[in-house]
Image 1 (spheres, rainbow, N blue to C red):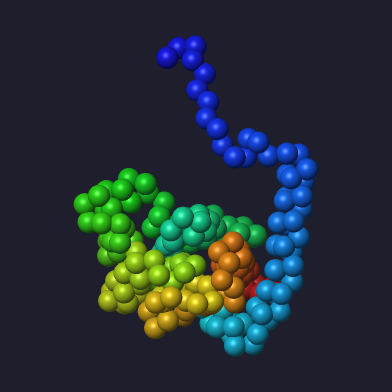
Image 2 (cartoon, rainbow, N blue to C red):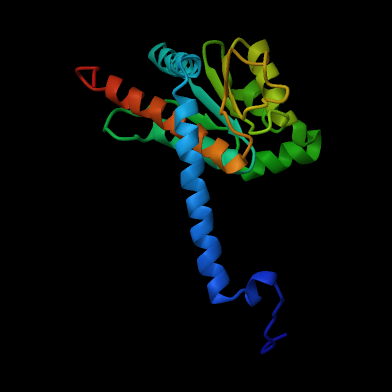
Length: 217
């Protein structure tokens, strides 16, 4: 009603200034400490080689005129959108646009497919309608158990697309479902997603550098 102020109670409303300062500082410290340990794990030679091989698949796809499709749920959907945007736009250096599509970007398509066919097929339909042999699907699931991601990878393989899967330490059901399965050595979702973005940025940066007249760093 006009003139009526709507209010609701939330636990954060009652938090003290001291608690805010303590917890904010604590979470930053924990994040930095986690990254210090994570960096060492990310330097493990087998993992470095696997990430480089996936990056090579990205570059090879674009060099051959293929399209990069990207998919993820929740925070991973935001990363997927970010990745696609940097291929269409740029990451660090000016260059001509490159074909990339985030399958999670259209709310209309997601809700239409989810309503008519079920949420597990929201990315399958995108792969089937847009994917062509020689394209590449980059799919992210921190748990490795997102059915929509697993089905999208299966559909991509059936259509002759290359596949890269990004996940966490456990990997869920992803091992064997993609050409390249990259495991972040962590079980903590925020760190997993941060590393996924790190790897994707490295690939986007490489594409930018290789798109310059000299094609080298």
